[in-house]
Image 1 (cartoon, rainbow over the protein chains, first blue to last red):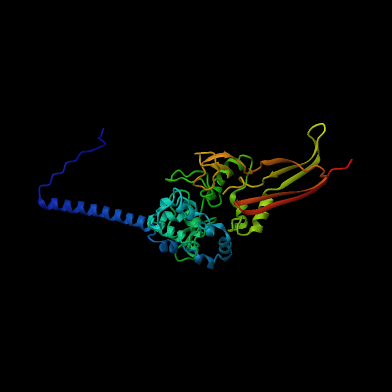
Image 2: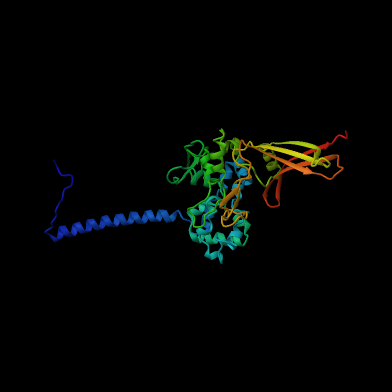
Length: 305
Length: 79
């Protein structure tokens, strides 16, 4: 039987041969070194080095040119203002996430951004401190530019396994050509129409991967463990993105629409009785009895987030 | 979201960084009816009453979205 491993001995008797081998090994090492550097460059190139760079990278204003109606819907949604009104300034001033100054902030001070600004993963800690400065100054004009926009869902989160491909968008159908200078094609996403797409952020419970865990959104958990086991068959998208409505209602800025939507989701039945209740043989007390019944039609508990 | 404490005491807290110990679920669950009965004695001599049932959603303390307002008027017969 032939041995699986051979042991070879080399001996070089001439300085020329030795010199050639040394050069060959050196070139090999250099090529590996260059490859490692380029890989490293690729990795560090994915991290935005400044807030401006992050904003520019995720600027989706040109999507409006072709997707005007969807863009207008998105602009009304909470996704378009995901870091506004989340009390982040309070958290930066007091408590376990607080900092003495904006310059001290790193990504660790923003566990909320896992969902409220997921693209922070593609930025350095310096960007996090710039964002802290924006929030502490209540610079709403800049905060408005940081949101969950087209690229977060249609690029960053459009995949299940691995990283999103460069120059590609993910959608609910495939288009070989996409008339854009940077994103030239669309690939059908395996997850975009599934509740897991929303569940990624509209969560399951505590985020223990953080030094300071948060337990903010548990809506998806309620969907999985209450709605579906009770016989629910609809997806998040079927209720909250009907006809691809990118407003993703409820839009809490539209109070009338929100109230109407809650009214449909929570029908209320009321029965009233009024009688003289006999407390003692001599004492009768007028008593009103109000019975209420709310039957939820929602796909998750209310309230939740 | 069910009512929660920070697990260090029994005081209800707000805020995702504080909520840890869930101790009472007052939320309305899917497919599950929530029934409540309120029994209210009224002053002696009252024979007619107007009841307003107001269901609203409070996003944050003071930030209220009305959902239903049901009005009933009822009286006790004199006989």
